[in-house]
Image (cartoon, rainbow, N blue to C red; front, side, top):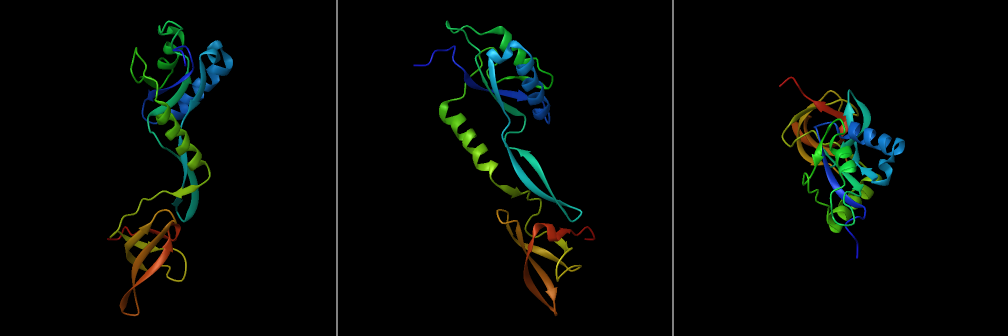
Length: 189
């Protein structure tokens, strides 16, 4: 049986696009102060996405839970009373809004944090394309045998990073399979 003074996972809300900054501050403060006795781990679930800008492949991190971090912390004493020091430490970090539950921080259920940890593990091994195209959109082919032709997207296979584009060749519309990085938006519409 776990007591209320055990380390549990909590959800910390941050200002938009401040997740990395808050995590950096907290990680440093945990290393440099006695807060490590109360805050064990800061989790910012991300997946790596492939993006194509100006014909170049780029990889970047995409947050799975924008504006949220997950914190493994000890926030209550043996009697169930809120420990002010770690609670204030977390909510007063620059860029943080506060813990879900406010003065009564609500720990995540075991299955909730297990699902989040599983998402992190699943995302660690693969890079997924960042889909920023939609079916029906007009694109210009920038690479391969059909370079400089334009067509409309018929299908998107995000997992494989491929598109099917209908291109007018030899007087008729022909479907061509291309990778995301081989096309760009056709802004001449």
